Length: 291
Image 1 (cartoon, helix red, strand yellow):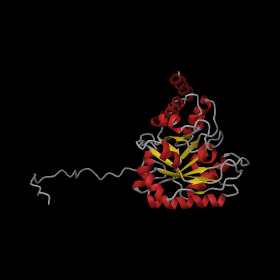
Image 2 (cartoon, rainbow, N blue to C red):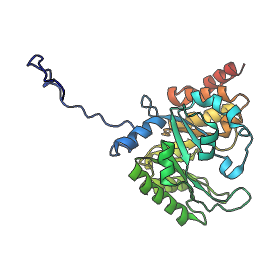
Image 3 (cartoon, rainbow, N blue to C red):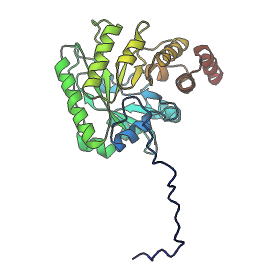
Image 4 (cartoon, helix red, strand yellow):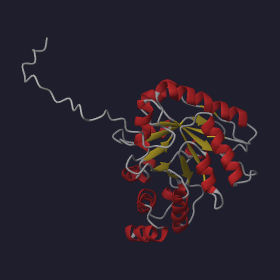
């Protein structure tokens, strides 16, 4: 038994200080469980409320994409510069050091490869595996308007139910088919549907007109998808515009690992996202780091 406390009778209970109840920093996340909020804090920097995610999950349907042929050589050196890593469980286990302490966003859906024209995905990770890997979030592809729309939406709702039981947030990735219109009306619909069905944050593409209406009408954080490889200044400009118009971060893949100097590009993107550095200044920083 512990000894009786024979210290002074008076204790400092700070009776004049009201109990503190600080609101959670992230949009739409104030009512979540502690574990879910803690995991979101591994992805989004609490100081800025934003994230720079590095997406390297392309291999789950594309195989060894250019720049991802050797994750251990090309990607692992970049890890200190990103807030979170979007990855498959196979690459996570085989090539990502377990000392990586930031957010792991696990690709949790899968199905057809690039050899098939249509995407028809299923949830591809067991709940026990999600816990075993200690991930910060689960990512699922949602094909709003596609031929397998209902199935992919059902994948999202099932994953949200699993995530809520385990305290793991779900990241809905809005997929756009080649025949779909990439306009504000579509993205408002896709992002809002994902949020309404329980996604804790959503990934979508930047569009030049109306992107601010997409972020404003979505009650959870939106992370901008990097998309196809662009010249570095264009990619930095796109990221800057997305942040200025309400995005809570970026999830870039090809615009990082297919850059001439990926580490320099990733650091420049961080300056844009977390410090709202102007695109031209960030590009100058990239060139300086590249040199």
